[in-house]
Figure (tube, rainbow, N blue to C red):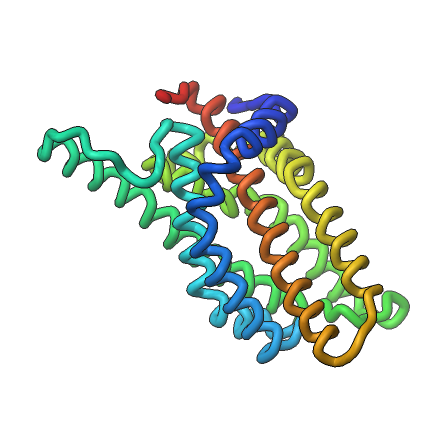
Length: 260
């Protein structure tokens, strides 16, 4: 049974992300701008229930951010850094760029595809189990459907991180096989929580502070933009830490060692 040390993976994720903060800031500029623009538009044109439209508007952001995250996964696992530095051997450089490009592109496509599938899945979930449903008036069948979909969500959770494996050229069948046990899935959920909660708390605190600040219409509009920027920043930090955490988990599952 494939297992990994969740605490070690999370600790390494936080330390490595902090240690590489200057390297990451250079790559983060374009994804941050693209995500900020897309999120601003999505929040204006969609409602919380319209997840599919939200994902369509966010599509450029998904690709931009996963370009960033796929490079980060390769840095953590393989030691490859962006931008690529030629060695002077044209044949070797061409082969290296092909391998890197295939991994990065595979990770980007997987990230965007999974985001869309999740939007569709949760749209179906909300159709059967509306957010405003009252438990005392709910049909028993609704409760059964909700329970089945929740269990399915937990079992499929591992594939949210498929892009990390694809980014380093690990085949999806191999990833599915390595992470198929319930114990491994539970460890992955725990790792995700440990890597996610601090960023969510930071976002809640920042959002609360910005909400409590008053002012005229111009000031309120500025605070609204700041709130969106904070949401993008904390979400990207969360995704960086999670990507590093699952990269370290994969390194343990596959007995890999960083080549840097």
